Amino acid sequence: MSKFLLYLILFLSLLIAGFSCSEKGSRVQDNQLRQIERLWQYNNPKESESRFHAFLDSLKSSSDKYDHDFAAEILTQIARAQGLQGKFKQGLESIYKAESEIKSTSGRGWVRILMEKGRLHNSSGNGDKALPLFLEAWQLASQKRFDYLAIDAAHMLGIVSEPSQQNEWNLKALALAESSTMSEAKNWLGPLYNNIGWSYHDNGEYEKALEFFEKGESWRKQMGESESLRIARWTVGRTLRSLDKIDEALAVQLNLEAEIDSSGANPDGYVYEELGEIYLLKGKPDKAAEYFSKAYELLSQDEWLRANQPERLERLKSLSDQ
View 1 (cartoon, rainbow, N blue to C red):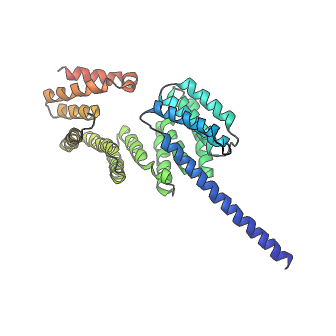
View 2 (tube, one colour):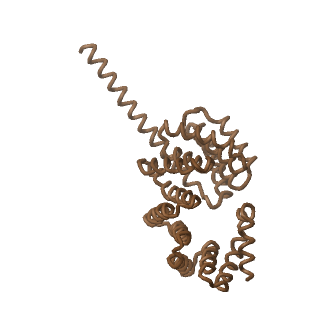
View 3 (cartoon, rainbow, N blue to C red):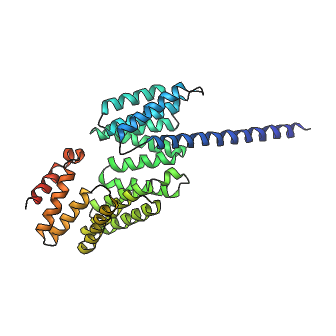
């Protein structure tokens, strides 16, 4: 056999082995991503933090080879859960642990460190420190084709950037979500339609806002998510009010109220608030006051609203007394 054929066989063997390792590595990465998502309970960050701590303990006690980079990823999710509870100092301490744990600064774990450190800075009122971290995360995740995380980074850049640049980042995230083959990346479509819709709404571009909110409603309907679908329908109704389509807006909110009542779901203060606003516009102050009262009873219990929009709650209270 010639040397050429021997070299060719050796090259092909190495190539096949490389593909095999790459495919195996990809499966491991996908499995780890799904493990992280299964542990999250986004509406209960305290419970999520407990789950991640328990999972990290199981990793450390596992008989399998300890994966330092995956452990670092778990620590970033502990940090995120802590940040959602307002425990920013503890969150940063978890990030520092992740930084000391991680072995690779070019992998998914490092992107997570950049993302969660940025989120902690932003949530604690230091958006200027967050922006360069999100930008670095976007660049690395895009380069490595970590689509799910690249979309997350672009979405956060859409939050912390100057208003004139926010939708530019949101649209970048949307383009990647729509073109990606990752199912986890596709899950970003609903939140992105919502975020882009609000960006247009806040800018007074109500027709464009309605277009994206309706896309969000359609997507949520396909996904079969009842609670998220109700929120998407609420945004459509809210925008119809902004477009002075008052009767259409009223029909949307009344349908939501009836659906919530018939399904046994918890009452929605935002639906009540919107009905109050609509009846006020229709010249029915007594009816409006009835709904404003219901809205205030529920929304005044929301810690975020009390801290960030106290004037909104005061308005609800004053209008409910009329």
